[in-house]
Length: 260
Length: 55
Image (cartoon, each protein chain N blue to C red):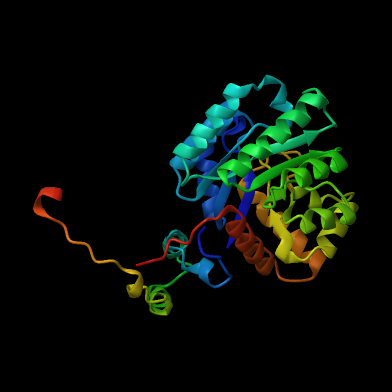
């Protein structure tokens, strides 16, 4: 039992072999994949992918890189998308702040992040937070929003930051970066944060774990991340996989379909 | 909100069971054992009467 809690199957990098990638994930034992929208168009495409696969769920939202291109019409369209696809859309995101690339002006990112937190609250969805080089501003914005259900995806802070996120009611999501030799800070976070607060993700097509580093990432590679987390915590990788899967299902409200 | 999932109930999801049966990771015998362990939800049922003109 294992879940890839954050991938981007709707992205063009998967256009030529999306079906094979999803099948491969199933063959490798990946039970569910959350495919995460990063703008309106890709959120719609994420929903379309999820509609066709019982083991894929989608999210909707605008990434900070795309903040500059949004206006009130964007939020109306996202709200409509969510309300029309309640069985498929399990979270609001990916939203947040990226002060590393600054693809959108910082002021616009902050405004759009706040607006989307409001919308997530209104829609009663957990949020998926992107935070790069913007820890304090991100925490402050989340704290002020009152939204207390979500995950800091591709976590890039230290243990002190992780504690603050967990205190706010958020999960910490561990990407394939944890397998890199130089990821000492993330490995320290994984060592010290209880498994009950961790999710696993690929962020595919980005950030492939060792031994696939440098290749296009895909959900089936999440096994390597689970094994590295298990090694760091000195527990079995199946325990890591199962507990992080339970965490993901509870965060995203994924229901058990009972056999009959 | 749906009920909280736990480490045991997660294995009762019929999508996961179907995949495990298909892959041979779950035998028919184990599947039948698992079915017997499922909670009886008969009390949650609601009786409905269908009238001819509503069919």
